[in-house]
Length: 408
Image (cartoon, rainbow, N blue to C red; front, top):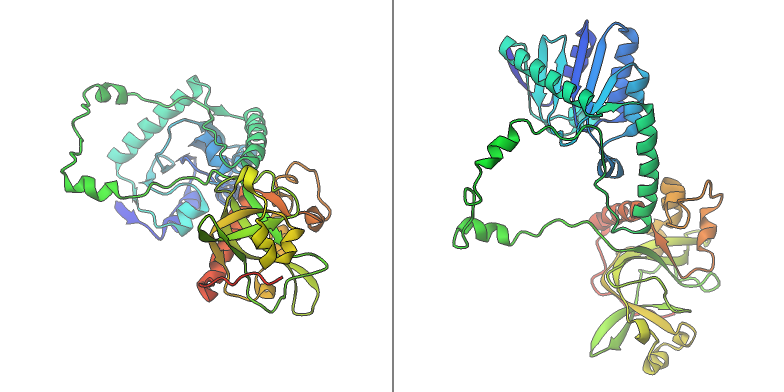
């Protein structure tokens, strides 16, 4: 029997879990808590089943949330033997060495339930025999090359993760390629690579395929700091029933949008991400802080003092004498009071909102962190969450096309 499965991956795996009598063998680079719990629940009812999982443990995967040490811990607590192999990309599920699933689906909820995956389910003896030999080969390699995963290794990984997470949130350019477990298994690959010639897949400049790919922009990870900039004063809040606005000035021969500061805007650097937060009132005239838009910073180091003619146009700049330019501005086409509450970010991320709070055991009042602050550095988690929330509102209400001048 050979069957192609896609949408029914989860149901097929669950049924095979339940029907298994002696062994379950899984190869999956990524694991999730939910799938680990699913397997654990089966093993509690069928204690005689021997279960083995070969995965990979990369610090980068953990930071990106595509793998989970907690999932591995659940498996170990359920008696599953877990091994880690660097360079692993294959996905395989084998039951009693009688039925096998080979395909694209990782052992995660996304892999078996949400993503569109394509796999082959079969009980053909020739396939089972070959799959079993490959599994045993990988397993032996892991055992012989420090690929056994236990609680002691997990403690080391989790400690490294905690350090890396803090560093990554404080410096968004931080990255790591640290890996754990057996080194990649290159049996057969190295020999083949000797026959590979650099000209075998060379694209000539005149090739139309080259032109097609030369214009494709590569995806890059955001590698700048993230800030929240507060606009307005607690005693002089911006009108909640009006659209957001920014100050526009004549600077170096062109119109520029700027953000003003009482003191020199230390820490902010060119191209840093800035979320603009308005100190305003809600519909009940109660004080609130709302995220009204976003942009990127351009700083002028020793030239960040406002110009005399700006003060004539905006007298309040005599108090807010420092500035940075903000470009690529997007302000929500929505009254300030209806924009994103900053308290909503606190509710979701809590101490993971600001880089100054992620190391603390507990933060009793996140709102106090912003007290009398013109700007605070945020985490990458906060940037991801706020960007998603802004995009949701923008899909419905759009952004302001002509940003009005500030009138405070």
